[in-house]
Length: 232
Ligand code: AP5
Image 1: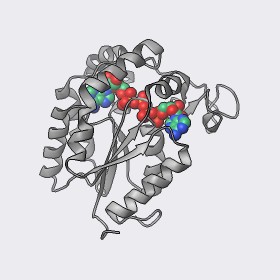
Image 2: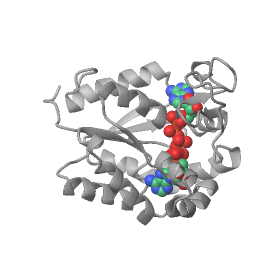
Image 3: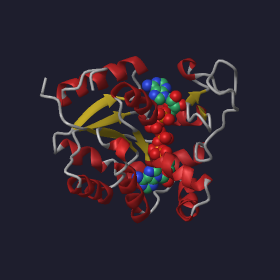
Image 4: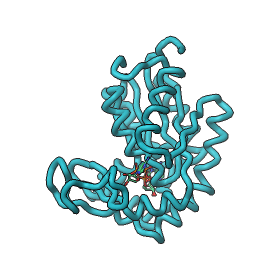
């Protein structure tokens, strides 16, 4: 085990539907650092009808990447907020080499660096089933899945916490997920070797049971960053 790092600056990498958001919610509560999802940030801009949201919407609906300039400045602003001072779980960013270089530069400006990259290696057939079965509670943000008993709501179509009706993301249809997987292979997958070559990558089987994924994540955070569960 290494001496504890000052900040848990962690990146979550993997194809759409690999479980990045699901495991980030748990790790955020466990280690007391925010879950920062560029997808969630962009979707809230779309709902708020901001200029950024209006530009981003068509790209998201088509399953394409939103242009780097828009996403990089949004990510920078979010990472500079006070709650990210002790670390973060960055979900969905970076998504190409340009974004990875921009992230490295913005962290370096803040005197920080990435300490760990989790890569959730997940087969495409698992992803298509998961994404088409995913349902979301809009206000709590809680994620469910109609095909997996571990993630089904107690009352069909209703959030366990708020009781609100569950919705499907507009980009969670079979046509768009095939496009998102293609974009991932062409633009994002090269980041696996990028981070492996820097000895930052920790690979996890994204189709393992949730409990195994969490055990693997907490073991890696202890081994590589010196932070034990509940001791951050
Ligand atoms: P984004 O919101 O980032 O979507 P994504 O990468 O496609 O990832 P998902 O949210 O689909 O998957 P996830 O890995 O979080 O899976 P989850 O945990 O929910 O991006 C959307 C769009 O925004 C992009 O297409 C792009 O247009 C734009 N965008 C975002 N960031 C950008 C950037 N940096 N640059 C440019 N554009 C950007 O899990 C999926 C389901 O599986 C859930 O139902 C869950 O319950 C279930 N599940 C999870 N883990 C398990 C498990 N171990 N076993 C069984 N079921 C599981």
